[in-house]
Length: 70
Image 1 (tube, rainbow, N blue to C red):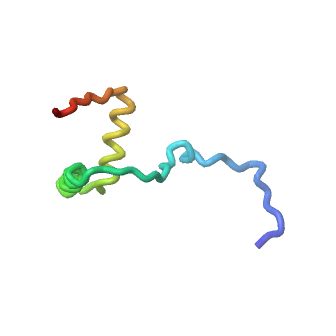
Image 2: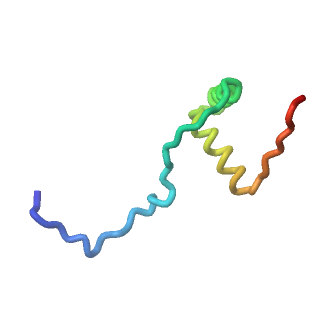
Image 3: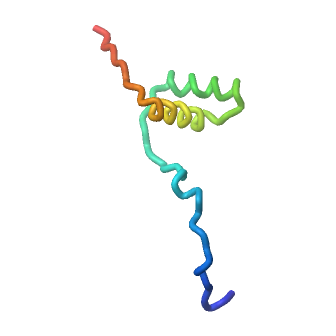
């Protein structure tokens, strides 16, 4: 291993802007089961499917429609 390295010609990592951030989120069992079943059909991990769906919502600027049950 060298004592010093020269990074003057190095390039920034192009993927740093698209890195995912780990968070904790509470999701009900039925929703998780829905995405797990969808995962089996498509061969995509369910967490990736949830991320893709949420990204689509954000890109399309979708608003949440809340209907409270009485």
